[in-house]
Length: 461
Image (cartoon, rainbow, N blue to C red):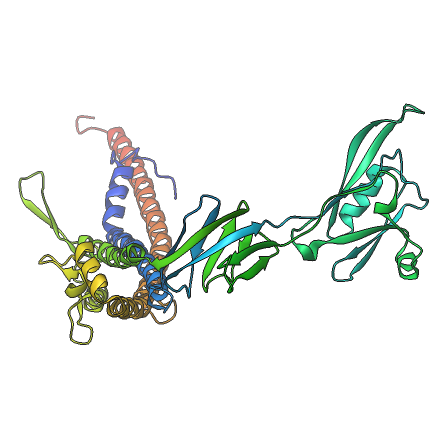
């Protein structure tokens, strides 16, 4: 921006005058900025709506799947056995006993000051025959343990203090070797020597060393179905969790017990009701959001007059269309039956409601029919939401993209106006500066003429 100095000759307030003229010149740019502000508010509101509907599309699509309403509960009569029901669970009961829990293998070496072999080489043979050879950097038991832990043999090693050597007074240690997993498949055999020594049968089994001991044997967890009957059947697991007792049911035991445990699987009507309620609540939240943005507000200005202000979505056809399609998706009949039969209805003011009591009664009467109806409604909502929020073809997405392009064009015009107004201000400042120069010249000429006239001889002379 150029620098303007108020008129020294003319006495005009040049800066104020130029500012006033520039305000008039900038009216078109101001109108463009107002359009940008309005469009930006509209875009923000549309993006918020689009995010809500995209989330609805995801949740409704999941509910529409066969697994969406395939919800069950699994309970046991024991505090040491828990169960969860997932997809594919079938209602029913079954009794079993927990014979034993899964455990890892643990063994310890005899008391040592350092590893007895040089180089310190061990070989581990897993239950499936996998052979892993480990060589430590030194005979230090700490180095031997570190090498075992890095070898990936499925065995962890820990150095444990074991008192003092009575002959030398040196600190003794035992090396505890544990399988990193539970179950019979995690069992291992440890040898002193190379893998070739193991193959040749010349390696020494660690358990054969003096003081070495098997602390715990690797084993699978086991439970028995129909224990004590001719139909008794054992089920094993490498962990304390069983996934094949009943279809879709996971059983976890924390203690063994010979007392029979009863496992009960039942349809989870509350979870299904909650899923339907969540769908309706989400749709209603979106409808309320659209309604709030469409609302026209009134206020009083300083003169006492009424000012009417349109909402961001007032008169906007795309949001109005989305609103209507969501309502239709929720309340349209299913095979000639109104969703209100299942507790889903619409109020006079356009809000969608869910009645859990009506839903519960319908579930008790015909659960399959209700589940099918929920799936149909969810699919219709998912399709409508997808049609509105899809990144490439959604009506809301396309509207947002179009409005963003408009804002970009308006901002480009505003930038052009910045240049135009800057040039105009410079022109006005030069014009008024020249005016001052011209006035100064005229004033100088006037002073000269006055001097010349005063020097002429008078008539009396």
